[in-house]
Image 1 (cartoon, rainbow, N blue to C red):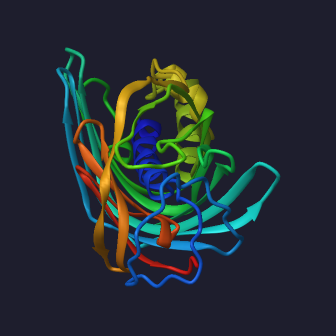
Image 2 (cartoon, rainbow, N blue to C red):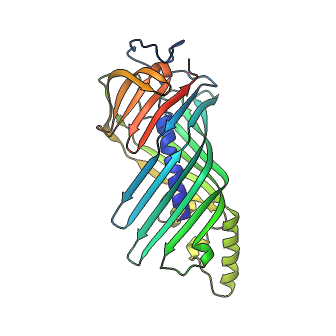
Image 3 (cartoon, rainbow, N blue to C red):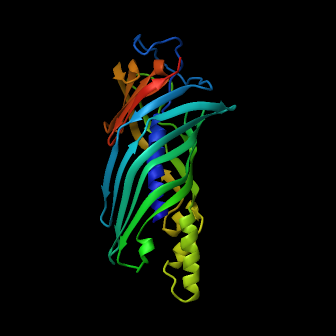
Length: 326
C-alpha cells in the first residue's frame, strides 16, 4: 500500500513533467517576450542547446477520484519547476528538474471485509530527476525522479489485521527512486505544426520501475522476523517478502498489477485551433492554441519562447515564469 501511494505521488510529478516539457517549435532568434510577429506555418522540430531553460509555475492540485470500492484524495502544492537542457547525444536531449512539494495522499479501499485507509503527508519534499527527449520527435523516452531520506508521515486505519501502534501512525525518512520508460516515445504534439490540423494520441507502453528504502522499513522487517520465530508475525507474508528494500516491479505484481501499462491510442485527441496573443508571467507571446481531448484542456505553444507557455487541463494549470531561450 505504501508503494502504491508513493507511486501516485511520483506519477503526479511525472504528468506535470510530461506536459511541462511539451515540444517546442523551431527557434526564432533575438525575440523579446513582448514583441509579437505573425507565426510561420510548418513550424518544425527545433534544435535545443545545452543550457536552454524554462521555469514553470504550477497551481495547487486537488484531485478526488471515487470508484465502487476505492477512493483517492490528492492535494499537492508544488514549487516552481525549472527544466534545463544539460546534455545531448546523437538522438536525444537530457533535461533536468528539481523542485519541492507539499501535500497529502489518502487511499481508501473496501473489498467487503472493512475499509482500509492509508494517508501520507509530506512537507518540503525535495524531488529531482531527468527527462530523456527524442530529438526527431521531441517525444519522451524516459523520465526519472527521486528523493533521498525525506520525512513522510504515514497513518493506517483498518480493522482487518491487528497492527501494533507503531504501524498505525508514524513518521519515517524514505528514499525513493522511480523511472518511467516509453515505447515508443510519448509525443503529444505533431510537427510540422499548423493551425486547423488534428492528430491522434498514439499508443504507448509505459514501464515503471524503482525502489523504496527506509530505516523504518528495516526496523519493521527485523521486528516481523523476530515475531515470526514466536508465531506472532504481524505482516502478511506477501507484504513481508517485499521488505526491507521494496522493488516497485515486485510490489506492483504482489498488489495484482503489472509494471507495464498500455496508454491506449486516442483518435483526434488534439486540434490546433488558431494562434493568439497569450500573457503569462514570463511575458506576452503569440502562441498556437491547441485543444486537448475534445476540449478537456488547452495548450498554448509559442515559438518565440521555444516551448509551451501555458496549459490548462483540470486540475492542472501551468504557466511559464521565465526562460533564457533566444
